[in-house]
Image (cartoon, rainbow, N blue to C red; front, side, top):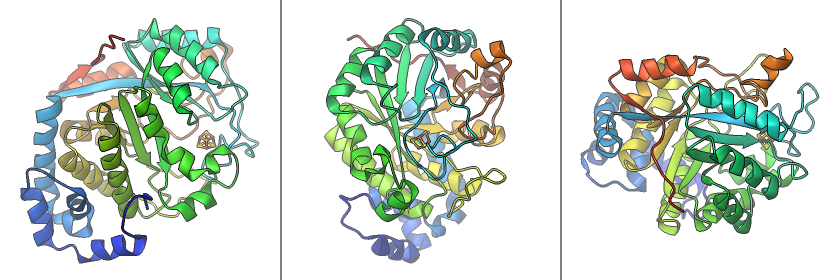
Length: 370
Ligand code: SF4
C-alpha cells in the first residue's frame, strides 16, 4: 500500500468486502468526497450504480473542463534502459529489441512530423539510461522542442529536485511517473535490478517535481500487476498526499492497462474494460478537479466514450518507438514498440471522433509566463 496510509493490505481488502449498496448510495449522494468514498465507488457493490455514476462523472467533467478534450502525442527519444522491469521489452536483458537513442536532428524531425498533425502538447519518453538521458541532454531537447510546442511533459527516469528545477527552466511543466505497483513486495519482484528497484525513490518523484515548480504531476499504477482495487486505494491516497504537499500543482491520473501479447509477459491480475470504466468514473467523481488521461492502450470505442464522461486528455496518432513518426519511415525500418497500440488512428481521425461526439478539441490550454 501507499506507505503513509494507516491501513494494511488486509484491512483494505476487508473494507472492500464489507461495502454495501447503501454505502455506495451515500457516497454518490455526497457533494464532497473523501478516500473512503473512492473505495466505495470502486467496490464490487458499485457495479449496479454504474449508469448513475456515469451521469455524475459527466456532470463533474463538464463543471471543471467543459465539453473539451486536450490532445497530445508521445515522442520516444530513446529505448536503451538499465532497468529490469519484468513486464517490459525495453528491459536491459531483452535481446529482441532494436535499441536506439535519437540524435538531436532526429528528435527535431520527429517533432516536426508530430506538429504537422496539429498536436501542440508533447510528452517526451525515454528508457532509463543515465549515460544518455542526463538532465543536460533532456534540457537541451526541451529547449529545442519548446520552440515548436506550447506544452512539454516528461516521462523519463526519476530525477532529483535540483534536476527537475533545471528541466522546468528548460520548458517542461508536466511530469508522469507510474509507480507500477504500490505493493512493496510485488514491486521488488517486478523490478529486481537497476535504479528502478528503489521503490521509495520512485514514489517521491512527483513530490520532488512539484517542489521544483512542475504544474502537472501524473500518477498511475500499471493495471494488471497487483489487485486493482487495492492499487486504486493507494493511488487515491498518493494523490491526496500530493494535493496537500504540492497545492500549486494539479494531479493527473492515468490508467495504463497491461495488454497481453502472444509469448509475452502474463500479468498476474488482469483487468477488464468494465473495471477500467468503473475506476475512471469513480476517480472523476471523487477528484473532479484533477486531470485524467485515457491510455492509448484502450480501444478507440472506449476512448471515444470515456472522454465524454471522465477523461479530459487523450493522445492522438501515437507511436511508441524511437523514430516512429518520421525517422523509421525515412530509413524503411521496422517499428518495434514498447507496448501494443490498440488505437492506431491518425490524429485527424481522433479529432473528428471527438467533434462528432459534441466535444471540442483543445490543442493548447496553458501559457507558461515564466
Ligand atoms: S518500464 Fe521503463 S524503466 Fe522499465 S524496462 Fe521498460 S523502459 Fe525501462
